[in-house]
Image (tube, rainbow, N blue to C red; front, side, top):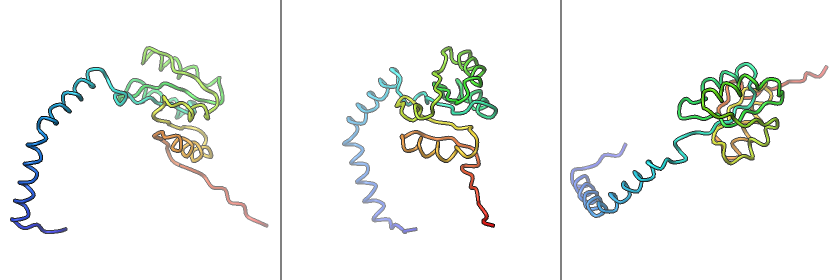
Length: 155
């Protein structure tokens, strides 16, 4: 860690004070603009979540996130349409609006309205879904194991 002497400290402090004094008016305008934006509501207030795989643990993701932690479950994705009923009903009851259902996870990656992807699929899908979601610019929640590896023994 670098040491600083008293002379450097005073010079840096004076320069910072002058900069802040000069920026006062601009700072107040910026704060007023931000306050106006907050009243309107910004896109950062609510995270739009897609849950991929809602059988078992994925259903718990839905129950944990729907309407909590500034999250809105906007999309439920599962290859087995027979599994989505309770999750769809729960989200609609909790958030007042039914989420969108998609069967093909590629549609989740293509949807620019989705901010976060959670995956509760069989283990061998975790890595691929996570990589695709991150490539699409989405945040990812994935539980262990991130990936499984199969080893083939010759013999």
